[in-house]
Length: 382
Ligand code: GLA
Picture 1 (spheres, rainbow, N blue to C red):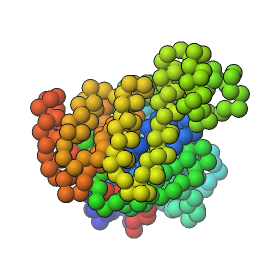
Picture 2 (cartoon, rainbow, N blue to C red):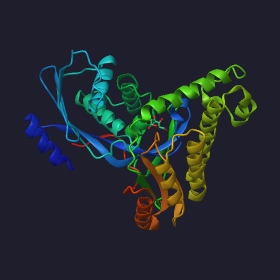
Picture 3 (spheres, rainbow, N blue to C red):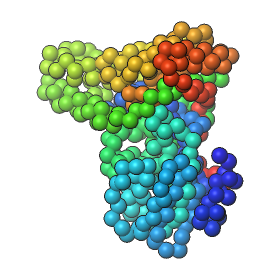
């Protein structure tokens, strides 16, 4: 939706003139389930986003509506805030964190509108959090520190929503740059922007399987990794997270770990190494080698981390058989959602048609396929 329509709708609902802020969803090129292990990730922001239209009020009331979800929300900033277990938790969680951070908070009217597919693993929730956080800070003329904003939004999701996500989604929604992937060190939040060759299209294939029950499994994977670290700290007292463990050390201490925990750790340790090589390959514009790393990442997520599903595996397999494909893998938390494919520019349209037809034949599900490119992070629109 264009900004003028959103502003007009805002005027109809609230009778005032708003400012509009926008934050994107994301796709991850490589580095999955590594962020909460202080490892490396390489996401890009995408063209799908959430817009937040906002106007300050003269009292302490906060009104929130969304054009994508039912139900309006109205409360006083001094009310105790409790999760409602629906979309509004992403908004209220951010408001809660802004209060806790001691930032100035006044009454506001907010109208949200977004086009990030929901439950598809493209971070529709981070897009809402960042759009709202950016809007509230900017409306108060607070300087926007994008790293701090990302951390604030992550805490909202960890503490208010109860999803123990890492920093990747909020970070890229704040810091993405057009035509670039962002290689992030999740330990110190240092990052490098890596240009994506104009010869490659990012194609996202939505399996249409929603990752509804993924958050329990997600938190379980985190717990598995933490257990791995606890056990490995006996022979390796210097380690703080799986980021500190080499493949060789892990192999040497394999006997100490229950088999499932060993496989979880092996995914994280090998995935971190893959992201580092992938950054080199992107820099050298060796898309073929980059694509091979994507394929290995998928197998590791499927077999060692066990966060793929039948539909994701089918989608990746079909993609791998197409002309012009450099690499394909599941992207995001898993258990449904999307795959990411790096496809030679001239082949992207044919890829879309063929993969959609073959996937539908194999599963009976009609997939959405988006041909996209890396987009900018959060911004004030008007
Ligand atoms: C979800 C989380 C991220 C990250 C990915 C898996 O998207 O929000 O922090 O852990 O899963 O890589």
